[in-house]
Length: 197
Image (cartoon, rainbow, N blue to C red; front, side, top):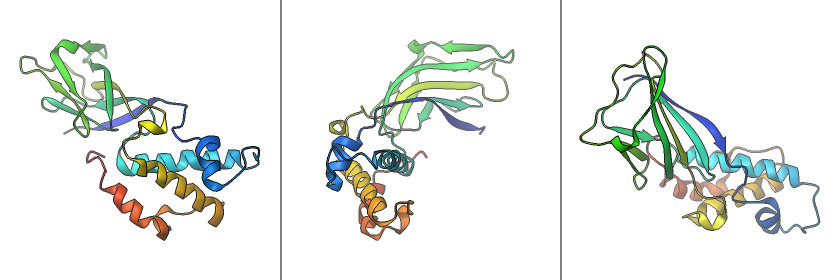
C-alpha cells in the first residue's frame, strides 16, 4: 500500500486556553502572582497536545503536509480534524520534479471525520511518479484560537482540571492514565476520537 506520514509545517502560536484568562482563575491565583506562569504555560501546552494526540483533533490551527508514496483510490484521508482548507495536492515524477495537481480536478470534504480530498469522477491522478514520497497534500486543520470556538467545552474543562491536578498533586508531572479523578472524563472524550490515527 505504500508509506503515509504527516509533517507539521506550522502550528498556531496562540493557545486557545491561556494562563492569565483561564488557568490562574481556575486555580484561584491572583492575576499579579506570576511565579508559576512559565510552569503553568508548559503544562497547558503539554495537556493540549495530549488531548490532540488522543483524539486525532487539532485544538489550534496548524498547517500540515501529508506525504504518501502514491495515490490510493479516489479519496485521500487527512489526519487532524477539523479540516479547514487544502492549499494544494502535489505529485513528484520520476525526475524528482514536483507539480501541483489542478484544484479543478478534486474537491474537499470538511464535514467528514477525518476530512477528505476527493478526486472528481472525470479526473485521474498523475501516474508518472517516483517510487517513494511521490504525493504531498498541504492543508490547514484545527479550531480557531479561542475557547469559544471549541465545539465541546469538555476539552477545555479537561485541560484545566489536569493542570490543576498536576500543580497541586505532583508538580513534576503525572501520568494521565493514573488520574482517577479524570478517568470518567477521559472515557467521555475518547468517544470523540477521529478514527484515522
